[in-house]
Image 1 (cartoon, rainbow, N blue to C red):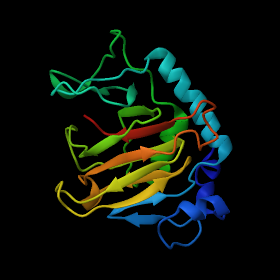
Image 2 (spheres, rainbow, N blue to C red):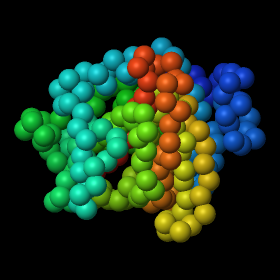
Image 3 (tube, rainbow, N blue to C red):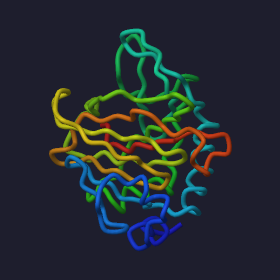
Image 4 (cartoon, rainbow, N blue to C red):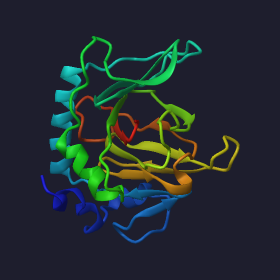
Length: 228
């Protein structure tokens, strides 16, 4: 799958259904600035989404999804797995990156279809070493947080949305800063870099069952980072 398929969203017109959920007045296919983060609408076409989903299923077979517990004892509503040299995880010991998943094996490699997106939109010449894969089922959400467990915070965070729409909320570098929201559709890609690298962000809710990619409903979020 070449870059032409990956960046097709910047060359095509939005469908009427997408325009109805877009909260901002932008040119069709143009990148959207959302509190300093950059959203690339429909960056992946349907074929590219399906190919990436197949690759992520291979990842999940090698390292099954888990429902992690926060250091404070809260069970997260999303289920997670990872690919790359290290994977993100959490338990009563804290948030961290680990070279091994819960079954003791090494994490699978980051799929080429995922790396292609990073190389197309990240603006840096270094590949990520960690790929976090979150699955949002019905009622799942992600509260406002910062991505700050990485060794160096100068590298961008690239996030790929697949499946059901998710309401993405992003603010500033303080939890109390004003926020703005936008529905992320299947195939959208978000980049947090520069001043937005440490922006608080989260997913308030998903429109369960409204996407066509996952037959049983749900949203997959693929987040690429340089962790070490």
